[in-house]
Amino acid sequence: MPTDPVLVVHGGAWAMPDDMVEAHLLGVRDALAAGWRVLERGGAALDAVEEAVVIMEDDETFDAGLGSFLNRDGRVQMDALIMDGGTLRAGGVGCVERVRNPVRAARKILSESPHVYFVGEGAERFAAEHGIALCANEELVIPREVERLSEYQREAAKRGATEDGNDLFAPEISHDTVGAVALDRAGNIAAATSTGGTLNKAPGRLGDSSLIGCGCYADNLSAAVSTTGWGEPIMKLVLAKWTADRVLAGNLPEWAALEAMNSLKQRLNGHGGIIVLNTAGQFGIAHNTPRMAWAYRTANKEESGIERPPL
Ligand code: ASP
Image 1 (tube, rainbow, N blue to C red):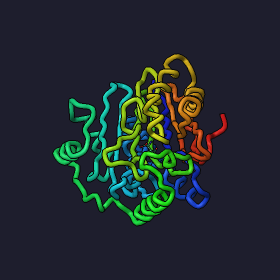
Image 2: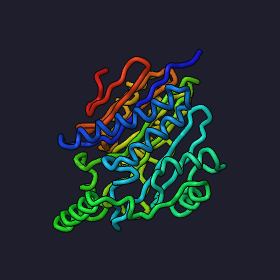
Image 3: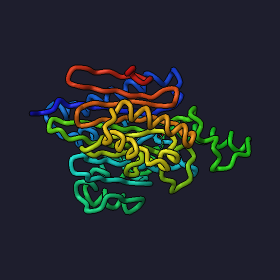
Image 4: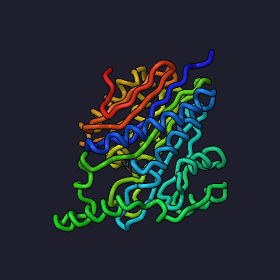
């Protein structure tokens, strides 16, 4: 019996100002449409999450691909992971600087490498050797981000803040990482997450997004999960796997998503958002930030918003 497909996407969780809401909603809806085109013609969940994430990487609204936050040196440095719940195959890239769509490189790793994870120059070399054209880092840098970084650095200098100060991690600071989880007609789930990381991060810093089980996870036995938010607390809790384990234990994805956000807050005063989907098509969207951009589509419903949908 074929399963009815489901697709859920997110475009970051933070105190998104009113004047940025529309762009975020348009972005997540475009991503949803791209992923859904794959699912409705019977395509794989893995392809659907990849296509959805590519759209948001190309959309400069989000902190992924083009328009990513800049690191302390003014460079874009991106991380991404994609995972197939049917086989547990995964592909991840960390600290790539010359790949327009890190999720495409991650997908190549998943499909064409015996390895799971590549970083930096080696990841770029792998991508190039597998048909992904490299770009100059400058092509991913947009004026808005140059301005954002210099404003941040000016303010930090005034306050005498240290580079690892927690002032970086207030929920007002934008968290525009993108992600998607999907269920296909064959009953498989998949997840993908892509990010430019955090503003003014130290070069070489890796967040949760591309780490397996932290910012992304998928297993048909439990759930497909993608997170966004302050990466360090999410990593410490291995939050995507933590959440999937709760689904495996018999809890609904909705409940597991809420619990994950509560636990993130209670344990480490972390903030962020999460999407969770199981092979029965049940899903959860939760955040402990003021807003989170999300969209979902099922066989008979399509919705998007910037606050968690009511249970
Ligand atoms: N979680 C990402 C990171 O820490 C940032 C984000 O979600 O905006 O790299």
